[in-house]
Image (cartoon, rainbow, N blue to C red; front, side):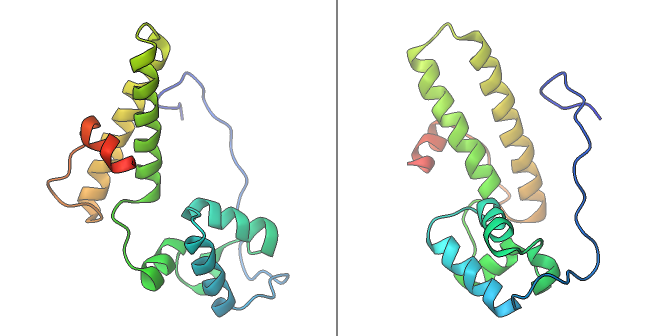
Length: 149
């Protein structure tokens, strides 16, 4: 399938290992403690997954604990105001707006900003539908700058 904001087709990625992982010798309680410790250190959910995979040999948190990584974070530390992927996109859009204030004729990044903001709106609609954001939530670039700070 083609990518949404580029002309590339994409490549097939790697597959997760199915079934019981014999090499994993870490218990679900230890995984939960690590997730909480890494989250308190300021890491996002995606970065926690990468750290667990690379440093601790945990291929998939859900297969070990029975619940997803974000669910563990919500249970242990409470619900986040905004999901990580949405905050990352908002942060990227705010930085790009700041760049475009200095460089007004940068047409390529103006197009890139439009694409990023359309992704934000699309993901926002999804999170409103699933109930992670309030039903009256809309993306506003001026409020987004205050939200990131």
